[in-house]
Image 1 (cartoon, rainbow, N blue to C red):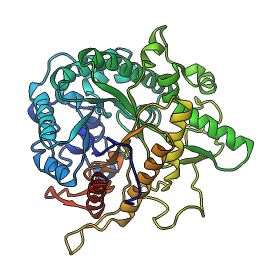
Image 2 (image 1 turned 120 degrees about the horizontal axis):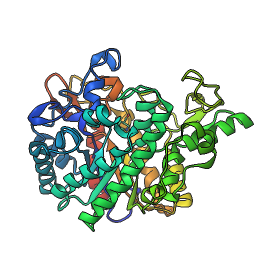
Image 3 (image 1 turned 180 degrees about the vertical axis):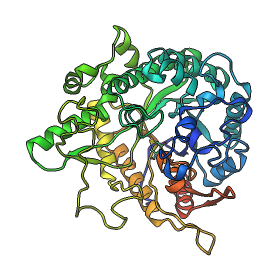
Image 4 (image 1 turned 90 degrees about the vertical axis):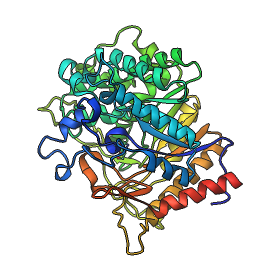
Length: 462
Ligand code: IFM
C-alpha cells in the first residue's frame, strides 16, 4: 500500500454519532430524542438494547481523544445531539449540553484533530415529533436552521466543516416509510415530506452557517450506493433505474440540479409534498462538499411490492427486490460483511466518478466507510480483525485511484472510531477501529485500528 498516493492535504479520520456513542441520555438537562422513545418500544431493537449508556463518551471523552491522537487521525467526525442542546427542540438552550461539545472541540484541536460536526444524525427531539410531526412538518426545517445557528454561535469560531444532515434517505425511508427506525412511521405522505423538509432544513441551515462564519465549509452526508439490475431483462433494468432515483438521485438531483428526479416524481404524484416556489433554490445553493457514506452496492429486480394497503405504485422497488449476487469478486476478504452487505470496493469508484461526471465534480469527503464483523477479544488481548483491515485497505486504494483520475477527493473517515449502538441491531454489530467492552467500557484498539494508524503515518512520511 505504500504506492497508494493521496492528494496533498487529504484528511484521514474516523466518524461516530451522538446517539450511538454518548450515553448520558437524560444527563444534565438533555431532552429525549425520537430514538430514546423508539428503543423502548418492545421488539424494535435487538434484545431491547438502548443508547442510554452506549460507549459512554458523554461523561468523559478524553480517553477517546487520546486514542484518536494515538491513531494519528487528522480529523474526527461526530454529531451534536439536538435535544442535548435544545431539550424541547427549540427555545431554551441547555448550556450544559452545549458546553460538552465546546470542550470536545477544544480537546480535539489541542490534539491536532480537525472537528467535522454533523448537526443531525437522526436523534430528533421527541418534543418536535410530538408537536409538529418532526420533519414531516414544514416548520421543522426552519427550527433545524435555528438549532444550527445556536450550535454555530458557540462552536463556529473553531469548527471549519459542517455536515448538516446524515443520510436523509435513511431517516426518511427507514423512519417514515418502513417503520424500522425512529420514529417508526409507515406513511408514504410523511416519507416524502420528510425528504423535502430535511433538504429544505439543510438549505436554510447552510445559509445560516455561512452567514455566521463565512469561512465555514458546509455539506451533508448521503448514503449512496450503485444500483445494478439483477438480470439483463428490461424489467430489472427499469427497476434499477427507478431504485437509483429513489435512493441516490432523490437527494443528489435536488441538491445539485435543483429538481427531483422526473420519473420517480411523476410516479409518486399522489404522495408528493407541497413544494413552494423558492424551496428548490434554497436546497440547491452550492455545496462546499458532498459527504459520501459508502458500504456496498445493491442489485434489484422488478418487485410487485404493495406494503401499505395497496398505497404504493406498482413496481416501486425501493430495494425490496434486492438480491445477492453470487460467484464474483476478490475472495481475499469475505464476500459479505457481518451486516450481510456485499464487499464491493469498485462501487465506491463508480460513485465518486459519477459525482465528477454528472454532478459537477464537487469536493468530496468519504464521510463513512467500514464494515461490521463479529469481533472477539482473544487471549492475547487483541482483536484480529483481518477482514476489516482488508476492507479498509481496498476502499482506501479506490479513493486514491479516484483522486488520481480527477475526482476532487479531500478526505476519508472510517465508520466507526468505536464499536457502538448499531440502531436496530443494538450492540450486536461492531464497526469500530476500537473494540468496546460494553460491560466495563474498556477500549482495545483492533488490528485494523493499528493498521490504519500505520497507514496514516506512512502517508505522512511519504
Ligand atoms: O451506524 C450507521 C451510521 O449511523 C449511519 N451510516 C451507516 C452506519 C452503519 O450501518
